[in-house]
Figure 1: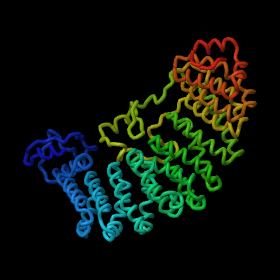
Figure 2: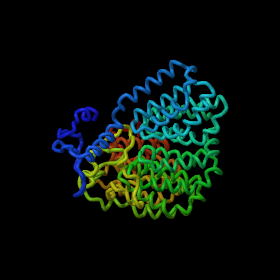
Figure 3: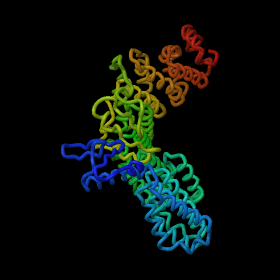
Figure 4: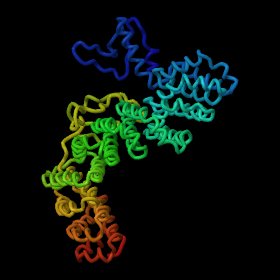
Length: 543
């Protein structure tokens, strides 16, 4: 973009702007193209603004970045002697640079703050902390991972020195929430560094400090759950889960309502990792705060059941796990709900057409956790857009819509996916409601035996991976009473051409032999089943 700017001439000279597209609407002006001449000051002003917008996140800012690099080097070389030069002018310059539109300038500004925090004397450190505390919190929440990392370095150096000198407490309400959320940030460098900083600065007092400043923490989490960056929203959901699991109940209890509303909002996200994180977080919350969560259960059941037939397997499994936690929290009331849902869904595969699909109208690539449609208007409207590194920015991705069924990229669930979700749910209810397994296992076996459609192997994988868990949850004696119908299809799957399905079946046989005993399992096999086990060559134990 900079080379384009240098070549641009005014006064009839033609130039091109890469990625130029025509404006929308009859009256919309197009960006300059190879056939457009700059003839009006208004057009020139608009073009310069667009050029700056494309430059600020991909290139340095002329000599400003390198000048700050020189300043940082001077601070490092001068040591404590530079303290007398940290005056109002320097601090205003750093403050302005930390809010600069260019990410490289912001990054070097925070690196300069870190250098001053390491080198300056005590009085200068107090002055620096007072002025830069809010700036550091802003940097810890920046959309660019590199800026977050630089701000994390500055925060660690300043906070550790402030703790040593005994004046860090006044800055914790501001710095603690973003430090906490960065422990779950998607960029590995930021995440690991933030976890180390948390241990150094908070020690074993972390949960107590979060409880102490719970209002600041919750307000920040709610704000971050609405961020443009999908990775930030996912991290916010993980941190909200942590509040339910690790922080004092008395501190969190008054905030349960607002936190659940935030998670429900994230339930409707376009990015499936965010939906998955919100789904799991809701399960942990209702388990920890069942009384406070009860008014939200109707809405949560609706969302969980919708995600139980999601096109993403891990989302289906996450929804089933969350429903299992609801069963732990509400016992008999939840059993009735689960039984009704299993009755509706476990045999849905019977309606499956031979031409089954898995993400059938989605591209085999994702951007920020969202698969793009292969056909229709939705496949074109997001094409030729700017890309971002490590999930940074992602401003074009919609966070949420108007209701629980509003995921704009979702297609109608396939019948086999509905049954797949039901198998996950059957696994999760087996410990607290084994009577549901006894009732629905024959129907589950029928669903797994249907193989006239392409994706039947996925259903088999789910079922055979679930069986050992179900056996352990039910106990040996109850499971042995109902296991006979599964043995024939289990041995048949060993000869399946799909390696994942056949190995899932082999692992299931070995797990059952280890749990029930080889002799017990061998007694359930006839000659045809033993022959299939021998021919497969996958089972490593003698039966």
